[in-house]
Length: 119
Image 1 (cartoon, rainbow, N blue to C red):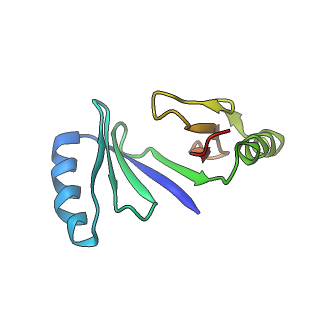
Image 2 (cartoon, helix red, strand yellow):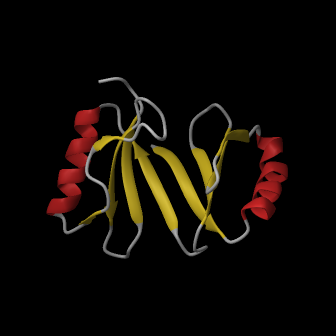
């Protein structure tokens, strides 16, 4: 299942306003705001991040049930020819139990596996 998707935007304030109005009927609201991005969520999972970045950049994070599965995702991606973009580990700047691994796929997309559970 998709944990979250990030879209690069050129004007964060303008895009925040657009997505806030557009996603409101679907039950999405702002969950997290940072200098570089805004996260919208509905409470049912599948968050959308908009990030001040190159608008051609897309990031997909796949949900993993355990940290061991994040490790396995990373190793499988490395074995399949992916490029390291962040080895498995905690990312406490996102939240206390954010355990993720980031890989660049053959077309340059940043893909991730993430587990939000305690060890």
